[in-house]
Image (cartoon, rainbow, N blue to C red; front, side):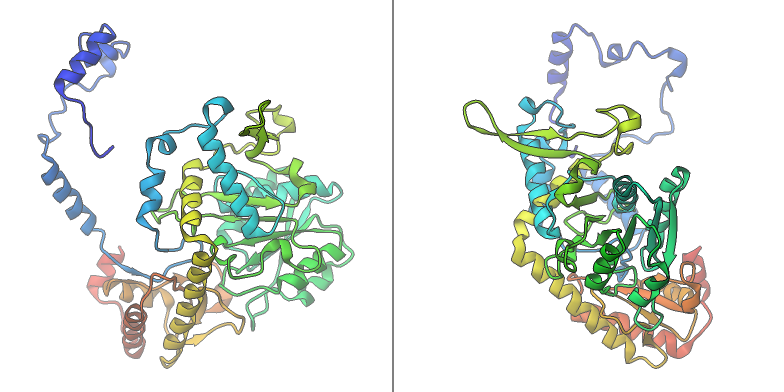
Length: 464
């Protein structure tokens, strides 16, 4: 905590009330040989001013960069009120609400979150979160296989995030589930219905449909969802929740809508912080609710007609025999869900739409500026949302190192994931970017591309 209010007199009074003579006596069960003794190499205590200065200086050594990275981790503006409220003790320190009579505040918040997510996704039921988007997709695959019963194969487009594909493979492989890759159109950057024709008539449990896909391109979701249903498969929508206020929700895809929608909730008010934490969300049709993993909060009334909230349909391994559990991953990232609920409440439908529209406008403006650089081209013709793939006339890794020297994180090098694309870069622009930011990136990249120089020693040193 940032401030500890207890004085020496407070500490003595608390120790006296529990019959302990010192703080050390509270831990007397720890054997002496396990204690460190005096910490002679630890410097003397600093005052608050000096600690703040020291930590600021150390943070500055990491650098302050203008970021055009995306690829599943997005820099959005988060109103200050979001985490000021979420960090209140009743939210910050609340544990799993097993006892409804003592957890009505937490349960109501989760119920409100579920209501918002069903509105965003256009589906009937939402759970109260999962570990992250990648494991959430794995849970959706397992859910589809359980529901389908006759098949243990799932169609997985190559346009799904490579980390998600790896995570799903790791989780489901040992259960005898096969992931069959669907190729993408090298011209448009999305999955074509023609690429699915060779799978027609075969027995598959589900088709995963990313929207937008890993390249930032919008998929033909209506055609793909209808194709899946025509071939007796479930349609699993893998979606970015930050785009759903602007794009058609999964529950409205095609004639019957997607059956399951999953994704990562990080764009909904969760800050970027050295790789996490994130949280996964899942929504589905009512017919599949008993196959849905994770917590679900229900609203009811008591004997006096007053509304109340409680956990329901708890088919997790903590509550049921392991062999009958729908999931053995118990972490649900409740604090991140609290932040997301407050974020969505503050922005509202109109605010979410404006954020998504601004992201799209900035992405298109960035692509236009980058395409004006000789040798730089947008790689796919499909419509982007807030990410796009560009090709460079030099190794992408070299361009990124030189941009970093200028204080710019220029995007993600796709060479390790999609070597067939050559020197390709996935760039992202959210609502946080200004016209000056876009111009700074384009100007620096233009200078780097025009010179095509080898990396200077300082760039090599920083990269190392």
